[in-house]
Length: 344
Ligand SMILES: [Zn+2]
Image: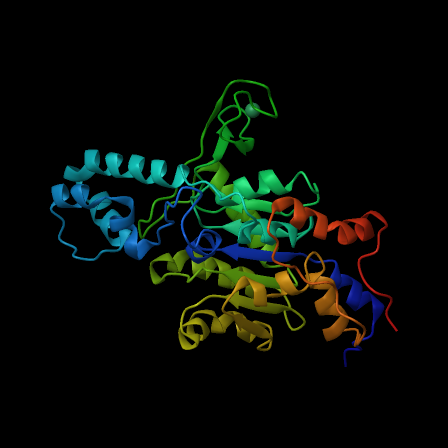
């Protein structure tokens, strides 16, 4: 029988990371009314209209009548006569996403990044630069922020063609080797049979699957695991199943119908003995309820039977400085090495 109060067990679980997976729904929640200039963040189903790609679709004379970018891209990719149009489409997609700019007020991505620490990870399927922009601006308040991984590449991500260092696309010289060899990262376009052989994307996936296999908390935010991404979902499922998960927990933030969420993630819930939560918004999640202490709070209550007062919650703030200031007590505790209340 497992003793739930075994300090070694508690320590082994509390020191593991919180991993967050982001899909298109998270970027939509970050700029729900559009970006700084009112430009909307599209999802696959409305991308043709939002990105203004109808002229390309018309010229390609496609068989598919689906409005979904994935279906359209897949057909064009499979047809030799669409090669040129596909390049035009790719450039337009890259330009559209690449030009999105966060509004000046705090957004969900600012709160999300500040709610995690350097031991944690955010992996995103999104091409838009919003997460990187948020990371840049909240890093003036703390440098103890989660590591980001871009599973389909990113429009704000540059890669050094000499040393493979990932960095901001605007860097004139590589932060690692100093050479002027920073090029845009590859974007993984939505074909059904994706190849993950690009150096950066492969490294990001290796890291993703590793930490997925060894995280205490997993939050899946706005990612619906589309059926066309079966290969990716299978790899995630295998990674998650490769470890003992009976003490771990999953939370899903998504506005999809509950049954659809359950059907998608049930194999993962099964691994944790059905320890999972489903939330409609970021503000209900453990990230907002227990910022920078989500794993500690979970372990204290679920494993160590702690019934003391909760950690402070994230509060919606009017300005970024107000948000940074509201985090100061937590930053102070971290500098003093205090991450969890004393256990009984
Ligand atoms: Zn370099």
